[in-house]
Length: 214
Image 1 (cartoon, rainbow, N blue to C red):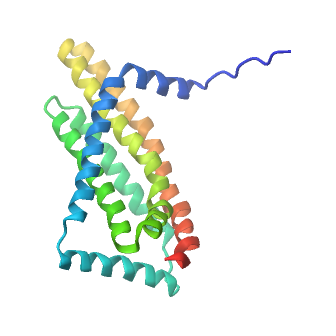
Image 2: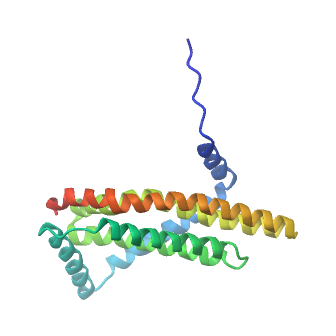
Image 3: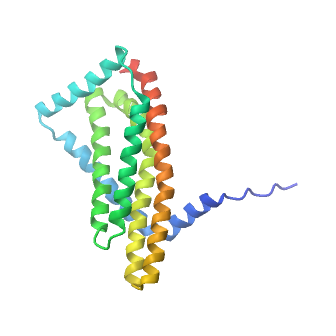
């Protein structure tokens, strides 16, 4: 007997439909993110000797402290990460809700890409290719697998709101679109809070497991 295909969950279907309906916008913000990453890598690769030395001192000091038994306060890290993600979501929601805020939203995406590229390149520059990639995978990758799609989704939601308002400037339409943008932002916030848990408890434990290799 043939098995009936499993029905896609409603949330998954909503996400798929959202991406399909806003595919061009996702391409745009993804390219901006990629540009930011490239700029971050370029910046590290062009640092002078004193800047590289400061970077090496910072990373090596952190690694050595963990090797010597320093502990990571998971609860404090979780609180800090949650606070950061709450602020980030609010800023993306608020700026994306204004007509003139879209360039700022895109600038935030580029800046986060820059930070990611800077982090990856710094790890490799200090620890070498193999250990640098391992350090990045253990400490940064997992939470960013959640954070980056959420950031792109928030940016696209703001762009969608802007386009909807430009097409129909009636108060009723603006009110509906803002409510949709707000509800979508709250959904994304739930995923961002999950990324905070991953950062505080999973990534830190992975880093501690791998610390002996650096």
